[in-house]
Structures are given as C-alpha cells and as structure tokens.
Image (cartoon, rainbow, N blue to C red):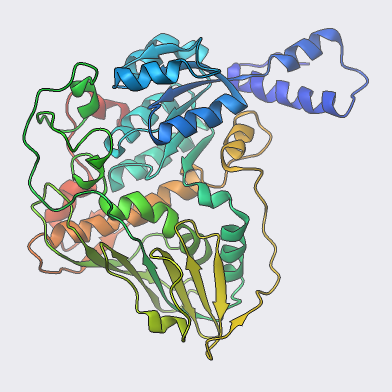
Amino acid sequence: MPRPSNRRDFLKTSAAIGAAVYVGHPTLNAQDEERSANARVSYACVGVGGKGASDSADASKHGDIVAICDVDDKTLTKAGVRPGFKEAEKFNDFREMLDKMGDKIDAVTISTPDHTHAPAAAMAMKMGKACFCQKPLTHTVWEARRLQEIADETGVATMMGNQGTSFDGLRRAAALLKAGKIGRVKEAHIFTNRPIWPQGGPRPEPQQAPPHVHWDLWLNAAPERPYADGYHPFAWRGWWDFGTGALGDMACHTFNMPFAGLNLANPKTIQAVCTGHNMDSYPQASKIDFEFDHPSGEGMMPVYWYDGGNQADESLLNGQKFQHKSGSIIVGEDLTLYSFGDYGENWILIDADGKTVDAPEVEFEKSPGHFTEFHEAIIGQREHAMSNFQKYAGALTETILLGNLAVWAAASGESKKIEWDAKNLEAKNAPEVMNVVKKEYRGDYGSYLDA
C-alpha cells in the first residue's frame, strides 16, 4: 500500500482500511490494523461557549479534541473540564493556537461572533485544515465569496453549521420544489421571530472589561471600541461591526429550504424597508424584497423576507392558520408549501380550497447527521457535506447578506432598490453600500483572506 503523502491522505487511507476491517477483510496484517485504529481526526475548537459548546461536543464524538480556544477565560476553563477535553491545550487567540498546534490538528470548528468567522476559517483552510464554521458563514458578502475560493483552492472538507440542511424533512421539501410538484412557483415568503436581542438603539455605556474577557481578542478584526455590557456573550448580533442582525442570524435556517429547492443564488435586485437605524446597530424590524431569475429559466421570481414582528399575510395559506412565528410559504400555481418553524423540516401542502394534501413521492439523499457528514468528508467517505462552503453554504450566505446591503441603504427609512452584479460583487447603482460588501480590517486579520 502506498504511503499517504500527508495527514489528510493518511486519514482517508486509514478510513478505507477501517471499512475493510468492518467487513472482515481477510488480507489485512497487524500493521494495517494498527494504522486503521489510529485513524482518528484531531479537532481544534475556536469558541467553546454558547453554540460552541455543542459544536465542540459534536467534534469530540467524532475524534479527539487536541486544542480549544476562547477569549473568555471562564468559558475556556469550564470547557476544559468536560470529558474528552481535559487533555486539550488551551488558548485565547486562534492565531496562536493554529501556529503552535498546526501539525497536530486535522480539523477546526469555529463558533464565534460573526466578525471572527472569515479570518479564522481562512487561516485554518490555508494551513490545510478541514473547517466547520457556524452560520452565517461570514460577516460580509466578499468574505463569503473569498471563503468559497479558498476552500476550492485548498480542497479541504468544509461545512457550515446550518443543521437543518441535514434534516430529512428539509431535503424532501427541497426535492419536491425542484421536481415542480407544486406547479410553477409564483413567489416565496420567509419570516422569523428574530431579533430577540436589543437592536436599533445607541451603544451601551463603556465599562472596564472584566479580567476574564480578553477584549482586544474579542474585537478581532472589528474597529476599536470600549467594552460594555450588551456585546459579550450574546447581544453582539445587533451591531453592524460584529453581527449580521436578524437576517444573518436566522436566514441560514429559514431561507435554507427555499434556497435548496429554488436555487436562490445571486438575486438581481434587493430592496428593504425598515424602522431606520444609525449605521451602528441594526433596525428593530425590516422587510426585504429579493428578485431572482426564475428557477425555470423564464422570467423573474420575487422572494420576501420579514423580521422584527413583520410577517407574511396569513391569507397566503388559503384559510389555514400560522403554526409558528417563523417559517416560509412557497406559493405555486397548483399548491402552496407552508413550512413552519426555523429549520424547514416541518411543512404541509395546501390546495386552493385550503385543504392539506398528501405530498407526492420524491427521491432525496438522506443524511447520517450534520456533523457526521463533515467528518465523513474529512476521512474521504464522501466527496463533501451538503452544506460545504464551495457549492452551497458560501452562495447561501452571499444571498442572505445581500439583504443587509438594502437595509444599510434604508438607514434613513427611505427605500432604495439595489441592482446587484454578482460576478463582480458590485452594487451597480449604490456605491454607498460597498463598505458593507467588503469591510476594513483592524490589525493583521484581513491578511488571512488575501489571495
């Protein structure tokens, strides 16, 4: 058997041997069996509190946790005593962790505020590390495109943490839409109950950062500002410098099934109305209109996003009632698909008379589990996870974050329809939003995204 050329090839070779062991391959010798037993993926986890607690737990179920990183010492200490984490080296700075532990790491999970995602993911992938990154994949549209390019250049396994992608219900609904089972789609409406954190107001009063929070590292690439209650560990989502608002937080879930079923990439125009904002904190509520090329190839298709208490008109359900404050409604010429909840897995079909009808049979690939797909891609048991950066998650993130360009343009409360050039990542008629397409980076963080 040829010698694997690097650790990734070693993992894939060992995984193949492991499969042979499982079926009782008669020709494996003791050396091969030992190599198979050692086919363990070494994970490093950036961000181990909040969603990072469950992401790192998923990693520990699939391999060995060799390093953990968090800017909050209390969070880091708490994670370090969990089963499977006690031997992991601890860091506050992901750059130091990757520099020191690079040859001991196969894969990285990134579960941090949005503004940290792209620099950490880019650095890891350029070092040849597989990368699992929470949603939204990036903080800006340009970063989403750049991570797609880096993932393609390096060939590493990737996945975004929009877990609904791996639910049978979402995949079945997407397959049904692709197969045209509800007739020609006329429009789509997508809505969320977010934000559930403060948005649209002034900054909180500055304070001294507590000693367990490394505030400069928390700021990362973001512009300098003093610490205050209301940023760490949760409400950062409402600030333009750190988060992506209600849209960025939840659309990777609620937009996910329509995106998969209707190919909602590269909208032609985006327009928003909102409650207004100060270009520092996101508005309390917004409604965003997207216009896409129709998936049939003929004509255009409108898609509407609602947040902050805005919601689609219940009459779209032909007499049925809303079952959740979040969801999506796909209106076809023959049937309406109503998905209720955040993740796209629960849905019904409604006819013109308001009656629910049985869903027709469609074929779709079932998932072994979201993180398991990522793990299998690392060790070569599948080509890629569905929500990989190159072919899925990057494009989904681009589409979603384009909505925030229209929100930025509507800061005064006045709406502007933005014409989008996807090839060149350019708002053709709105140069004032280009600083949201691609931002400035503090320190050296932007250098990890350089070509």
